[in-house]
Image 1 (cartoon, rainbow, N blue to C red):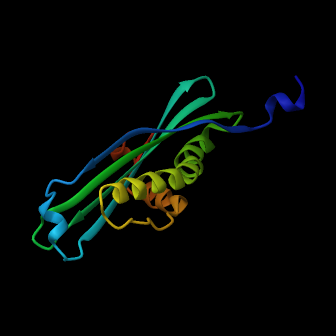
Image 2 (image 1 turned 120 degrees about the vertical axis):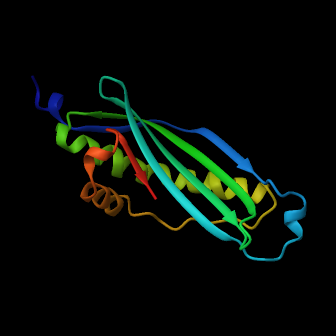
Image 3 (image 1 turned 60 degrees about the vertical axis):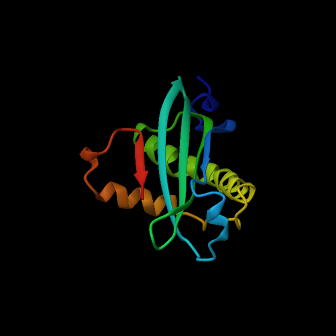
Length: 156
């Protein structure tokens, strides 16, 4: 076997929007309200093996805006998917790659899809702040690891 046969491999095979939904339940009246809504952002990362050394990672970003009286202004959710070739990486390093490295690649695409959907709905764009997926992963690892499903890292 040559040395290159065991070299770590990481490549992006495909990036795509797996699911996108937008709701504006109070339209058109909600556009007359001048109150600034409270914005809530939730993230969830999931990874699954597709084939030998090929993984699908999905970063789901949900952004909701509510007024003080709990009326929903808008709700947008995007599941940004990616297919990654990941080979010759030690088993213990696979989860950090899929839960930190891959979401770091997917997040800018999800952020753009969210901002575009909100703008197309007639609202000012919401620009999501950068996310430190490594810190979120480490915090999740400190919590009860037996309580979460393998390959899923819900991040609130």
